[in-house]
Amino acid sequence: MQEFFPAFAFVAAYFIAGRIGYSAQAIYWATGAAMIGVILQLAWMRLRRRKIEKKHWLTALLILVFGSITLVVKNPMIIKWKVSITYLVFACGLLGAQWLGSINPIREMLGGAFDMPDVLWRRLNTAWALFFVLMAILNLIVAYNFSESFWVGFKLWGSLGGTFLFMAAQIYLLRGYLKQEEPPRE
Image (cartoon, rainbow, N blue to C red; front, top):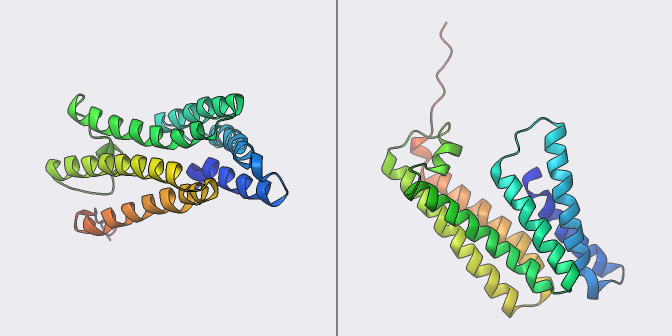
């Protein structure tokens, strides 16, 4: 759940700022909250001695860079683009690692839970990359065609909800490949 702390901080700050009379600046309060949230997330992981993976550093970098630019130039579209750029970077990372580096990142993450042939691992990796491209496109469609508050809601329910649903669908479709725990020998 801590993976989504910056997003929750963003959404909460946006709606709180709007409720207490700062609706015109709510996106900027939310951006600052996401920036603080990602720093707190990394600090919490460090304190708990959890491994801070490349994806955490990349996400933090993108939030801090795009958040800073948003706050300096006072243009909310910059932070809205950050979401799509993050998705596209992840998609490129998945496909690039698979095609150029012969590494399947999804297999690296989920190999302990699933026992599948290589072709299915490649399909799963590609499916996640295509999902990220789709989410990047959807984010921009919502950012340019709907209100700011709708986009914030989409950021929470559409992006995070879509990711959870996609993940659940993958688990359902691949349930036959789940590794079975061996019963203890007596």
